[in-house]
Length: 337
Figure 1: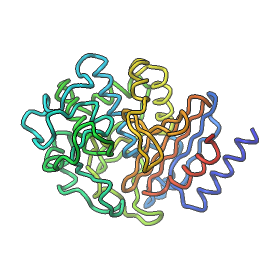
Figure 2: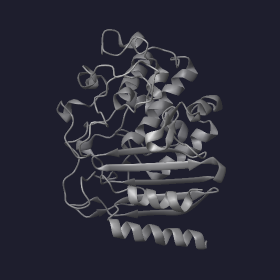
Figure 3: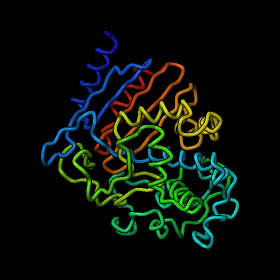
Figure 4: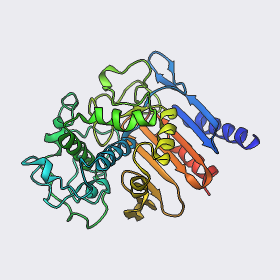
């Protein structure tokens, strides 16, 4: 109990000093030790965040995409060796013929990225080349994905690629004949019991969802920075309870079976620049059994970590661009081993 109280006090101190806005949850050995909310979901109307607020998870959504893919692999609709070209037809002709589903999942496809994170710039830059309202379905991303030359042969090396996960969303739609967002709901959220997770439109957010802010203060939101409705590489909204449910369901084999979970958690690449490894849609520690989801975008910062050996799960999600990182550092220092 003393450790929990000390951790709660440390979280409150960092939140106060850094202007954290969002939610933090820590679970250990089946018990919730900390679950607290700070800041505003809507600053203009001074609506506070609560522990049940739905917040965006940015690239944390990639794990949902990976699980949809693996669920379809389990059903025989796709295989890890299925080539992108076999489903793309004449679309996206610059994607090499030998790029497979597994390459895309592991960020080893070598395809050019429509959102190249190595290009520099600020997270709040306006980077999309088409109006954001034109990006509401996965098929509508085709103009953004097209025209980016291959940067390396398939399988040669790891290179984090946002576009690869939108391509995966296209592939699962075309293989199954079902809308990507519906696949996430039926194949991932429902079996996991994630009742408050989904791809919301940023221009019609419900009262339960937080607006994403570009800075620690001010009223400017990210509504003009991101697709109006996300797809395979980001854009889902969730709650900390749903994220905890995701880890529980994943590790219990309730979304896909244990063999496919093990494949997702198996290191497929070293990522030396970040002192980590990468599986299939999941970040992996280079030195311990920790796995995590991570997202960073204009108005969004998110990390959720799970370590089976210590029965530890924690999540930090913020509705301003850099809000989560001081608390992520705190929890990693206090709870990492």
